[in-house]
Length: 202
Image (tube, rainbow, N blue to C red; front, side, top):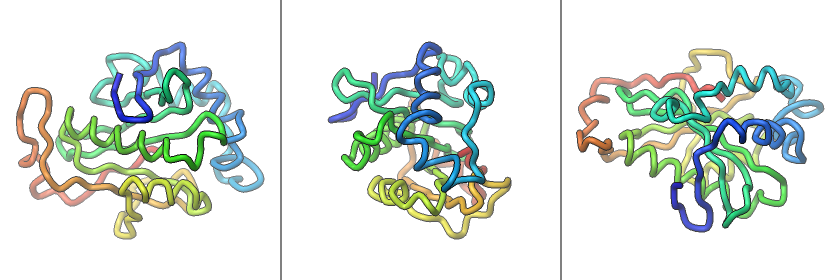
């Protein structure tokens, strides 16, 4: 369990994957992030497609340090999910995904707090210093929430792949001080001379 404040993060398990899929693809949150009529370029995935995108390792310990999902808890109530992917320890950077369980948990700062908690956790544990999200420009609510968590639109970012949305926005949060990984090693030297970010998965 990662203690955050009002919310905490619990490492997700395989048994959590079906409900995480339901929150994304079949809840009152869904129309604000994918599918017709607002997002025809981002169709709602099938269960099979979701399993391919979020493979078993995202819900098992062997995903630690690579890509992992967590359940956002408000007390004992599950209110959403957050995860990371494409963790590059050499470049000290990672991509983050987040969505809530229901609309009633949006607009209350829970997602912002979970984002800050995940950033702090990955920075402390793996020395990550660059964090990326790639929402649609149409999702102004998400962009505002990410900005509250310290993310900024990165207009200089050059996409290495086709973004998930036709109007995908790259948002970045960068921690300037070096992180310290579990063995105590300083990762500051690992990013010297690097200026290119890996593409976010979305």
